[in-house]
Image 1 (tube, rainbow, N blue to C red):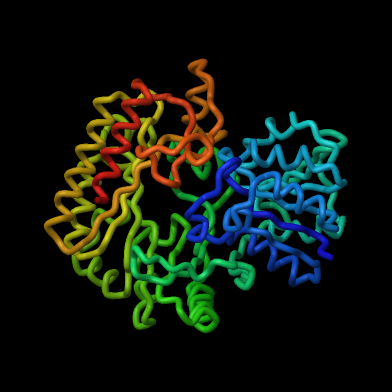
Image 2 (cartoon, one colour):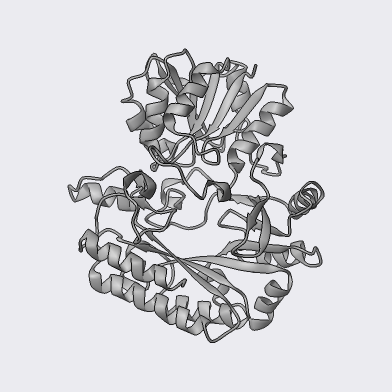
Length: 440
């Protein structure tokens, strides 16, 4: 018997994901699991994404468990699925709901018709959930059934120091074998919070003013990587999942030091403004330390669109930075968003042209390039979400491609919502297909 059941909530309702085995392990839930284990609370974790579980199957699991508490992560992209799970469980449970953007989902959750108690945890939850399970915490009551508790920087349970332990034994699919990249990969998170204010992102500073960026120490990261090498003998690559690992020149120097001489590849997010002034010598040092690939969120090739979504660089700066990185023989994966609110087909064409230019250049040098294009998703609380509402447009709930239709125009990880750009769905699908061709 466990005191609490943690579930990595699915994003599919009706169709199973053929690529679930390559899903990233739920590290956030892993930190919660570890803290529960440390204080002696029995806990079970189910990765419904990896296990390809439908909502009905999850409901059945919850009905059969003796756990009093059930923890679920919730996002704009799966709020309807989580609602279905919570409201259809008939056995008495207390549901703990959380996630990076849960604050903006509270008004929707308050409307749910459920017989079970819901506790919404706003903020980082690993230090407070053990106290909730021990029933030593009071929370603000919305109603008899729905309560909320906030973990702000002033809270005793706020993790100012994020050098926290992580029990990796619960991640069934780690390490992940990436045949396309020739690596066997494990995952770490090196920071929390964000420095940027992108209009499409739930981590934007303007809507998370109470969250300050925090960074793990060099020693803590070094020790975790050493532990991974000890317990996962086949690992030859580390993927850093957070956005701020390479946030400035000092952190880049730390990354080079962290991985040099360790017989490991590594992959990480990068930023145009951090890399735009780096010398070829520094870029080559990043490569020599084992960097297998960098990820950059370009988002658009249109300066008008970049200003609209508050990206702090121009398309020209982005292009020059990407060229410099490719010249150093580093490989890149560039992300783009198509179908942004009020985007015109001319601006969409600028993005396609930009992607073609960097692809053509990459074919002439040793640095490899991958293009990843996504349809715009309206996330609750973001500037673009509120912009759509201010125009009187209806926001269509986000659904995964696999639950809607199979289409050659959308990649397996893409989601579908409404059309908010100044062009139609056929135009968007056509450009999505053209972007995918760059990876052929």
